[in-house]
Amino acid sequence: MDREIAARLRWVRMYHETGNAGLVCARCGISRPTLRKWLRR
Figure 1 (cartoon, rainbow, N blue to C red):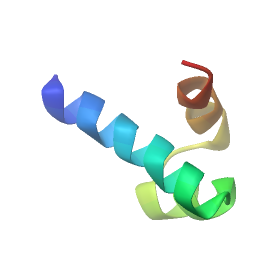
Figure 2: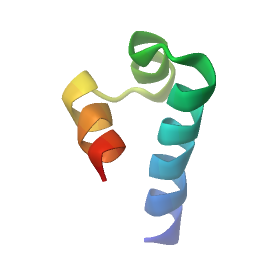
Figure 3: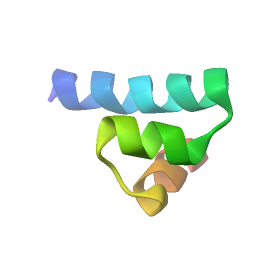
Figure 4: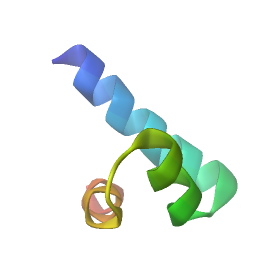
C-alpha cells in the first residue's frame, strides 16, 4: 500500500513541477480523470 501512495504522490509532484497533465498521464500510464482525482485530494 505504501508503494501505491508513493506513486500517487509522484504523479502530483510531477504535475506541479511540469504543469502538464497530458505529459504526466502519458509517462505514468494513468488517465486524466485519475490524475484530477488525486490533485483534488
